[in-house]
Length: 206
Image (cartoon, rainbow, N blue to C red):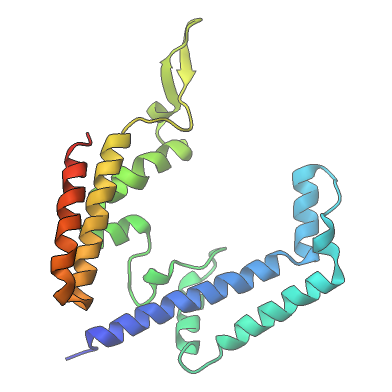
């Protein structure tokens, strides 16, 4: 029969917790003076590292925090998942996403596809990501410049605000309906008026 739904939920929840513990421990390591000093010098051209990062008490606290966090990963329930993170990470500089553990999707796009929300991913993140990372040349170009040539597109604009707002409302409604149906089905009647109200608002956004 395989694992029950409850067991898979517990495993996924534990993977999320282990991922966060590993992330916090890595952040504590990153703030160590020996790590911060060369990075800060390279970024600022030789300015002194801010005082907190050279304060012995601050550094001792960071080291104690990292040790305490990693000790949690030694528990019998977390150790196998911690090992799975390490194996999946391989030689990459960063940990994989928590949902990639145990054969899960490795990227946010794949995660969106797996739950039928690829369109929402593209609307909320895909286009903006292309512009931010410079992979969409058209997204870098604004309107015609008054003195000739093309202007640069603004970092923030109201373009597609209506579509994004509409999609956000509909996605929130869907999430709440799924949660209520799974956890508190007897409360569905209380949710219906809000669904009707916000669906009407979403319908006005274009």
